[in-house]
Length: 338
Image 1 (cartoon, one colour):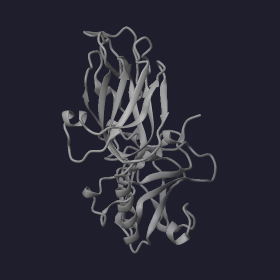
Image 2: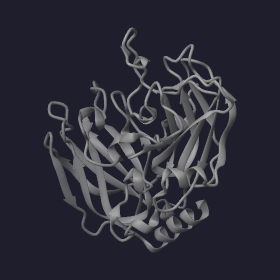
Image 3: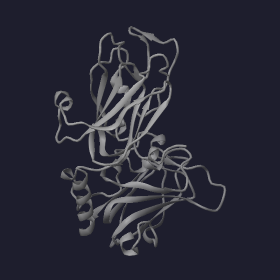
Image 4: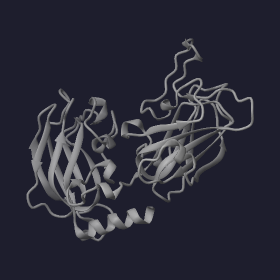
């Protein structure tokens, strides 16, 4: 059974700006492969100057005591809930054990400073299986900016996935005007009718969609219903501008869309309840970034995007500002996690 945290974003992914900033060795395969967004691949009989080509990080065979390490700067700093050490296609050359540590540092430290940082343990030294997605639960606690993978004593790891909740650096946010839905700002997907082709988390990911596969796309409906997704905003706020982007979706864009809001503070409950209209059912064009001003919108904690009847959407942006109590809650959470 897949852990619930596996649906949370991979905070280390290169697509979110993650970087493998240091490794003590990468003789056989480059450290940067660890955080590639795509699943690892393997083609037998492909040899380079250093041997069989592997889609992962692989160190030399140790002839002395010690272990190998790689440090990853998280593209989305945040609270870690689970880690995957994926040894796909590494069979006779995977490390028998691994551990994962984490640290939180300000500014832009170099590799030498990171090596000397104060590291906490997320995953203690644990056995690994070869050619396997080794998954480890992590007790959520602090907001981390970097993780360190240690393998004992050497070998190859295809991917390192660090799943969790992004927590933004508030120093760089104008809380009166920002994208309340953005993943990097603390927004998250909490409900979805269908994710047949791709994850709804793509809707609130950083940057423009690179292709149709970088958005959210549902299966073709054969009934009278419609598809929808629900976003929990970074904090209670007022939305002033909505952007519904169908870029790359041409023969499969929704015909129409609507936005509804919910304020759980007024409803006195944690889950979305009574919905009110933010944007009425509106016609959409394929392969287009649509922008809609929202006049006199009410304070909102959750937004539901309905698409009619089905199809694909590249991005959803909800620009606005936090209410006073929303600001207080966001700042308090950030301070508590430091």
